[in-house]
Figure 1 (cartoon, rainbow, N blue to C red):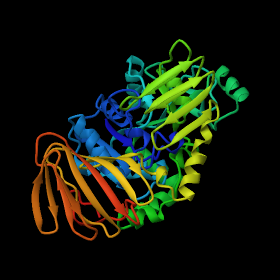
Figure 2: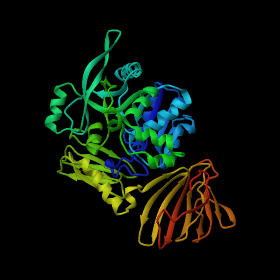
Figure 3: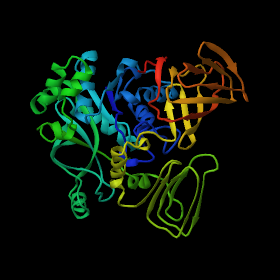
Figure 4: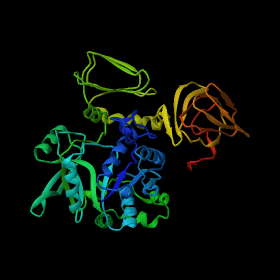
Length: 465
């Protein structure tokens, strides 16, 4: 069995925890593993590393590589398919299955979103084995057995039983249902409907045949486009559910009785986290971060600083240092409207956190004003930033940990803790960590414009523009 992991989503419904440059699949919310890393670990239950394929946005290439490296896993880099722009799940899945078919011939492929929380148990393993059998003839989706009526999920109405050797291993899909209101959700649960998990099992030949019938525009785009950029200009933006699954007469569902949460909102995050005796789900992260509770119940608190609540109930409070979200539980599906507003206003806080990750390390914005910005830069051992120029700002670097090799103009020299250098605007410069420990530098920027797009890369180890 091959595995296709979908890792291109932006996670806009979890702003400010999730940002475009660091979406929820790469965030370590529940443990020391990101949701993407946990998905990869699930993929390894049925696939070898060389049989795992990943479709993601081109902007996330190095996040994917870093997460794989942290797992000590070598997935061939040609298995990482980089979308120039997100066009929903059908183009991503079609591209992934097309590449798998070209490399391995007709294959059974598990398709896994990378941003869900799932418990692996015997039921999980057994469901995938059943789905593998059904995939010979059907397009298989996994239906989660509901634990309660839920208005945030789509539903699947099971139809006729599908039996193999006298045993029922799945059902034909009678109908897909949109997210319902509460009363309708109660009826769905009473009538044995399943939650639509967004996980699939496809045989490439069966999927391609159904795609030609029901999604000809998508197929045509991949046949007519010469490069992936041209293909994605032609291909329509559409989900695999709308494009194929709701139209085909070959849709089947395999019940999956395990814990599953799509983490599609902060309400879902609250459900997934452990609660204290007052029903509060709390996670603190950061230097001196702390939560103090005075008579507060049933809240979600995610914070990077000292946070106290007094006499409040049923709130979502998310503090990431540069942004604060306060919402009523049950209303968090509307968080994406905040993200949309920020995007319309070209506010960079829709895109990046205070801490932004790069292939060489990361930087954290500590303070900023009208004509200055202060960052903490960390550079991993053996890595270096691009050789670059800024036209609108000068920079001052102070080393606080490790050893820095610095290029400023035509000079190259070493800086140690406590030592510093000044880089005037318009002068080529580069920062490198030649040592064995993480390099930490405090950077002070001064200038009329301090945006991240004031970078002209002259040479880059990572192939960035």
